[in-house]
Length: 316
Image 1 (spheres, rainbow, N blue to C red):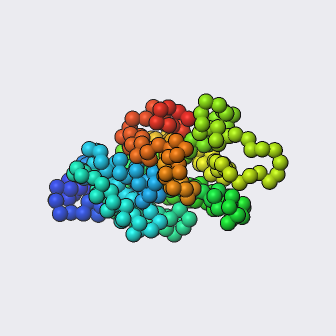
Image 2: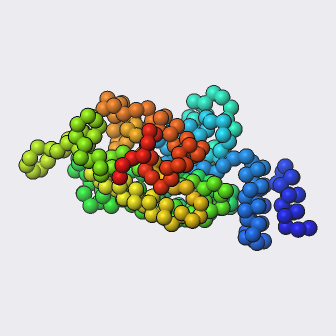
Image 3: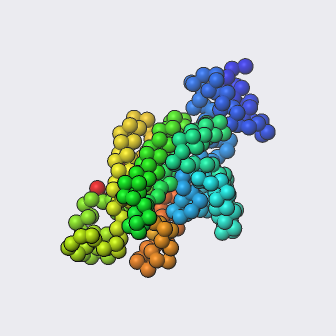
C-alpha cells in the first residue's frame, strides 16, 4: 500500500489519533507532510491558534472572541500557570451561552523560561504537527514599580525587555517551523498605540496623546505622576522592529505578519484597576479581542507587515 493510501485509510478511521499520523509523516518522508496536515485540517475542520498571556486582560478577550465565533478553532490558552489558564476557560464557558464549534486547552508558556518555551513547542509538535496562528500577546511592564521606588531602573527595563521582546523572539523562533507547516500561517505581535513616534509630537485634540506626551514642569527630579510609561513605550517600539524583521525573514514563506495595536483598553495594565483606566477614557477590552479575531479571520490581509489599528494603520 502506498503512503498516501495509508494516510487515507487511517484518516477514515474515526478512532485514530490524527496527531499520530502527522508524526508518521515526518518519519516517512517530508514530501507527505503537507498532505497529512491538509487532511488533518479537513478531518478536524479547525485551525490551531495559540495565544500567549491568554488567561487575563486582552489575551482573555482574544480567546473569548475566537470561541464565540462560528469559525471552528483549536484555541490554545498560553499561560504561565496552568491553573490560571483552566480558570480562564471555566469562566469563558460560563460567559458563553451558545454552543461553540471551537475547542479550548491550556499550555504552559512562560516567556521568561527557555525550558518552558521549548517544552511548549515540543507539545505542539507532538499533538498537532503545525500551528496556524501564533498571537504573541504575553507581556508586562514595570514602570509603576520603578516609579514607586520598588525596583531599580535597570532591573525594571531589563525585565520588561526580557519578557516582551527577548522571550517573544525566542518563542517565535522555536514556533516558526510549525507555522511553516500551515496552509495559511499567521503571526501577530501585540504592540501599543503608545509606540508611534510620529504621534509623540501631537499635543492637542486628543486627550490620550496629550496625557502621554505633555512635558512635565522644569526642574529635577520630575514629579512621579501622570502617564509615565517610558520603559513600556520603548520596549514595545522595539517589538515593532522585531515584527518588521520577522516580516522580512518570512516574506518568501507565505507567513502573514502584523503588529497589532489594540487601542486604549480598560484592562489591569500596569497594575492599575480597569475602572481607573475607564475614567481616563479606556474602552471595553472586548473590542480589542474582536479586532484581533477579525485579523485571524483574514479581514486585514491587505495590511500585512504594518502595525494596524481597528480603524487603520498606525503611523511609525
